[in-house]
Image 1 (spheres, rainbow, N blue to C red):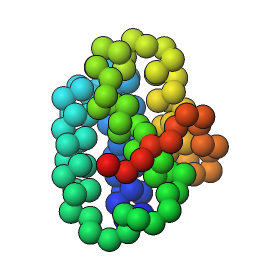
Image 2: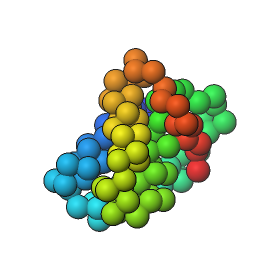
Image 3: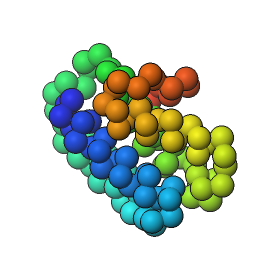
Length: 107
């Protein structure tokens, strides 16, 4: 399961950063979300293990990009700042401090 999150974290960061920089359309982020959910459904073991910091951030970002409308993700400065901080944490593979209010849970 940790391999799943590590692998998908790099992809998630790529898609969300690209979207925030207006280089990747939201439809690609949405497709990545659904592909990730489908792959997650195939994981059979390890779902009850304790969370690692990176995993909490991973699930939080996924939730945010799926929950908020495309326009809000682009235009809300507070939300963008939160996403940027979470992406920094995700890309640092846990060496960045866990952002406040960034406690994602597994679906």
